[in-house]
Image (cartoon, rainbow over all chains, first blue to last red; front, side):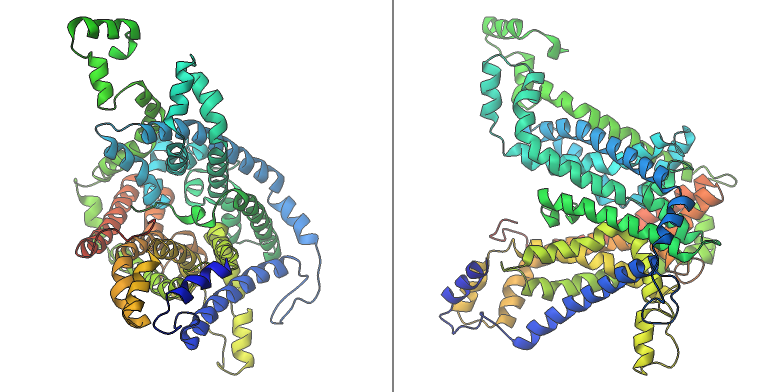
Length: 291
Length: 308
């Protein structure tokens, strides 16, 4: 990688070798800025982690002593077992349903040009472009009207709104790169539509589906706004329970809140590490490729 | 429905009359049974995205008491509510501007391929996936009166008393930068790597220094991408909700519009008012995006020569 980076620079250097290491000061400044950002970011995470294992910590550089017992307390105080089960249920259903709805949609959008395609594409782009809190409030109002909010169903339905279009967006390029002749050949050999989907496209699309699933998983576990607006007691996911613990601070020790924050961070990081084995980091953020 | 006609009869009829069947003519325009696959997705979004929006819009004009527009009148006549727009713009615009403007030189420096680029982008994804709630919790401890930052400032005698950096405007601002900067940076980086490096090389051959190359080659090609990045960063910052509550001063200096909408809808259970505020929020957001994209329309639009 490094070799390919420096090679074009030296090739393009009839005006003398300026691009190899241009303007040292600017370069250092840029790296210093990035380093400053990361130092603060990791110090920020470190304080949460340290506080979660501290006996007491006030005003000194490091805690007075270390103890793991806040984790046990947090686990009991916040019923973390139940919360994690709810989170896993929501995430699993959201992933499965958004794949089931999203992949066929992506297939139709990738393979056909039809009148009104731009309108349909826009329909699938809007929920990704518009921030969740904006459409979440009317959505939660509707879900309350039909008595769906406050239950697991409501949380799942709300979370599906951005994830279905997201799966469509992620899957379209994966489907476009499969040669339509393969399907045509299968059809010539007598395969029906369902056979083509299950035996031909399915196996070919596994990497794409895996990538989409893992991205949806990360987003659903981290999705605060929609879950917060629709969750009731017993249907709140980890991130919402964490928010309630921070915001509705009561008599509990702050360390238990930090312990839960660490549990949340750890589970997110594990998901992230798994995700990054399958997808490019930018796919996690690039919500729209703005063509 | 022509779709239910067995294929044999359709082609048979076509052969007999010499005219392509309805089904064939539709298929030529791209309409066939494959489009039925769109149905679940479209119906789902119509039910859970379009219908709630229309319902909210309708609800906002049906206030609990008063006339058609009384929700909007209340919003714009009550300074506590009206000012949420300015407060949110005051947070969102500077934060988005800072995130985008700082990203440009850094991404420009780091656009080539080099060892560790993937590590860097991976690290940058961390704050985005951690989310605002954890960031807020960290900020409270890290920037709080007895946190490391204030300790450092006090020990070096830079300040006499702990600086208050959380539970005010700055706490929310920092939280917006921590989650917004990596987002903006990764987008700018992907736009920059979509610009053909040969264009810059050509300019370099003709003797342009890096300033000129950046000003006259890269920047004009990057500007449309920057406009999009700014819009997305702004939208993220404008919809700030959890951190405005957690590290901000939700009743005062960071009483942002999403808090007002949430408060009306789910704490006072005045759904019409909550919907009205959500609609205003959407309208302001669209307004800013329209301004930025309108400005973008005046810029060069064309091939950037690269994959983007």
